[in-house]
Structure formats: structure tokens, C-alpha cells
Length: 289
Ligand SMILES: [Zn+2]
Ligand SMILES: [Zn+2]
Image 1 (cartoon, rainbow, N blue to C red):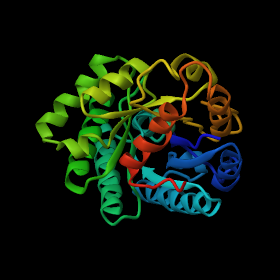
Image 2 (tube, helix red, strand yellow):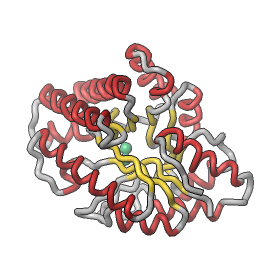
Image 3 (cartoon, rainbow, N blue to C red):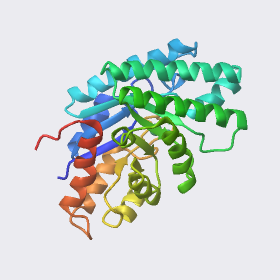
């Protein structure tokens, strides 16, 4: 079997399967690495009460990372402030937009501190809504994203960005502030365009970033062996029983990769580059041969 890495996934021990069960199934079909990204407080059934509820998501994340690594999977752990939270906090929790901005800053600053202490590996998800929203909320999300990039520069953190899918525009609207902030090249390579289209992923790599591409069977069939191996794959599995298999189960992604291995141009070198080399470089982990 080819070793398979999941470059962006979620686990939910409260409502879903949780990390231990997921890691076990993933490992059985070749999985060796997962980047686990914290969900927003309400996904874990945490009643929202400001900053504390985000701190609680980090506690759950750390326990989930431990569970996955005890199941024999290498992990990276990230916690963020999702752009959809900006809308939810205003609509459902009636927060004032500027208070949401302040909370977002406080949360990503806390996460950057944990990252500098080596407790977590990076900040994610931050970014922009992929759907229509109010202009003020889009700006708030962008400001939180830019704060995360500044913190990434200060502390060398990885950042997973959730963004709209507008190709060059999407890359440009990250690259322009990144230039202003003065992200050094080694930090830029840790800034991840998560849920990218394959074409955008290659462009992001050329511009000095890295991207993850959803590993659905449909996309794997289109992409593997055809797109230059300069991207990482992700399941973006949300582990929510009300949306089973969204975006794809990590083990289904791995099984599909095993099935395609040896077919077409999908050789060992090609798959190692995506599933091992780039992952080792980004996360500083080591695949044990
Ligand atoms: Zn996302
Ligand atoms: Zn995600």
C-alpha cells in the first residue's frame, strides 16, 4: 500500500466518530498522517460564551490529536476562527460586528501563542466566506486572516485558509497582504490554500504557497497522474452524522488512492511526492519506512 496523508480533516468526539475510530479505519487502508483542524464550538455542543468556548475547542482538539497518535497516526493540530463563525456570531448570537472582530483577534492570538509553545502546529481555519455575505463581515474575516498571517510570520505557524474559489483573484487577495506583511519564503510555504481546485493549487505552489485538494473519488480520478504533484490531498471530513461522508471519509480517500496506484501515470514516485515528501516538509513530521 502507498502511505496516504490527509492534509486537512476534522474529528468530532461528541457528535461523530471521533479521532480514535477514524484513525484506526484510515490506518487500515494505508493512512499515516492527519492534519486535524478544530471545529467551531457549537459543533462540539459547547454553548457559546465568548473566548472561553474557543479555548474549549482547543482542549478537545488536543485530546483528539492524542487519540489519533495513540492509534498510530502522525498528526498535526490546528485551531482557528472560521469565517462562517463571523456570520453565525452576528446572526445567531447577536454580537456586534466589531466585537466579533475583537474576539477573532483574541482567539487567533491565543492560538498563535499555543503554536509558539509547540502545543499546536498552526492556525486554521481562517479566511473568507465562500458564499455571499455582508460587506462588513467579509472585511472582518479578511482582517482576521491578515492578523493570522502576521502571527504566522512572528511565530512560524502554519495557517489553513478557507477561501472562495476564484483562482488568481483568491491567490492575489492573500498574496498582496502577505507581501505587505513581509512573509519570508519559508513561512509562505506554510500558508495553505485549503479546499483548492487543482489548477489553483498548482498556481499557489508556483507563487510560493501550498494547497490541499479534496480527495473525493471523482477528483482523484481526474487529478492523480495528470496534475503536477505539488499539492497535498485532504478529506475535509467534518465527522457529522447528519452529513455522512462530507466531504469524503478519509478511508474512502485512501482506498481510492490505493485503487488508482499503478494505473495510468499514477506511480509510486508521484504518490510519494504528494503523500510523504510535501507533508514531511510542511509539518516537520517523518514517515517511518
Ligand atoms: Zn474549510
Ligand atoms: Zn475544514
